[in-house]
Image (cartoon, rainbow, N blue to C red; front, side, top):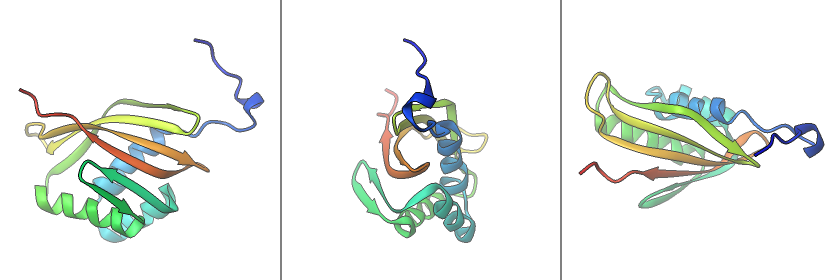
Length: 133
């Protein structure tokens, strides 16, 4: 594989790692609904869509509600932790993560896959790994 000259593409690629890590930390790990809403306004387009395994969520407020409900459901020390660096190109990025109580066992692992438009997340797919056997 060779590096592509981004200048010849007309625009630079977004910072996939920064964007996806900020999503985990400032949206899905944020317990304060006001700070979470501010992060969603900064990181997501006006009308984003999130695809969960059993649900499709539309809009920043609905995504915020899902994040808040997850944190409430799994307790005060539950956190999402990125694994490695995000990768991406041509508007598609992904970041692997694990989640569980801080200092405890990993409860779930997965990958966030995003479509980035204008430097913001337009669509987010939450892919969960099957439980370890």
